[in-house]
Image (cartoon, rainbow, N blue to C red; front, side, top):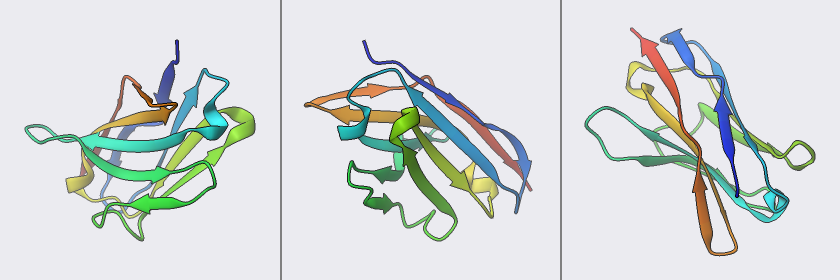
Length: 115
């Protein structure tokens, strides 16, 4: 059973920064694609950023230049550094692990950006 535990969410003023972390309890972390998704109230869950096993990254247009995704395979951890936060970044942020044709989700962490 793969478990993902997110942390680092909270309340921040617009223009501020937060760093999210997601720790995975699995031996297949190094070959997995890791993603950060977010879901705002009343909206569908959307991809914010993803990183594949070779370190290549992909970002939603809305976060390009402000968010950075990274991974530490030795720690089974993926990070999302979020800078220049905007009120529209307010959402629950979820970590997703995809590997061997299966996907697993974390429980989510709330990020609230005040104007």
